[in-house]
Image (tube, rainbow, N blue to C red; front, top):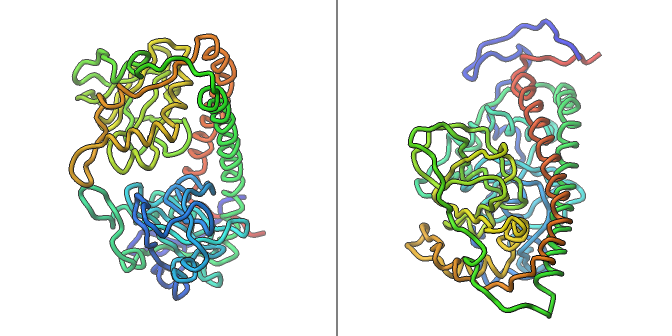
Length: 411
């Protein structure tokens, strides 16, 4: 790999190599390359089943995972043929969390997309799917989507023409492949770490279920507030610089939360390592936004959105237990049922979940659970930190490769 001397030309998106083409996205797609699915964010429809042909949701673009919650039968799948995904399609999140991209591979099951997704079907004679994915992963590609969004309560992409008009610089197929060759090993390692973390977290979930859900010898039930502080009082002075965690950084799947944002404190929830965070506003709660805080320095105090609830165990023995409780489906359904407010602005009332009844495990069982989970959480943290570094490397290369400012030798 080396730099090559090359001439550049000025275009409306900046300088690009003279032999690269400036084109609109619509010129790189097949005729039916852009569609948006039929089901809304809550996906509460009679057509949806517990088995059958899967429905791809926003999380499948954001996290590149292939666990499915909703399905349609074969008859409905055929009726919704225009919303079906095909191998090499790009699926892009287009509502709420915008611009996250994943590619449908040969190993992925057939399915249809929900309303929170767009699909792009690249013309293989003009653009490679992975190159188009890297374009949208780059800052310029990501901003080309977010700058075209609309909506005050929840941002979204309104129509296909908005996306089709995006302009980008396009090298030859051979140079696209060289760029992919540089970037794909980084993505492969990132994906391996993500899959490992998913497996580790599922191990904890299985143990949680065995010890605290399936065990028929349950102790007397107590209210959750007996062992948890909600939005605990902490001292942050107004204007004090501290780490800030945005709602977008709270994951729908997995425990890992992370932020490098520092800003003056002006209000909001406050938290430390060992706390569990849970979104309380629709649709973030329904989508599963939760996380376990372990990215801060020792004794560091951070703050964030008022739209999530901080749960801090009064006894540290129960830290991992509380995280998996928040991820438990029965608990989440209880929280969702307790939401109040106008449509689109419904929120969980903290007082409601304070009274949630739990079967308190003995300190011996909780300590046993923690002894297994602490190294698992530690490995998840290590993998996630490595991914942060790999993403930083990839993202530093992306803009230079996608713009043609950093050239790859084809010899």
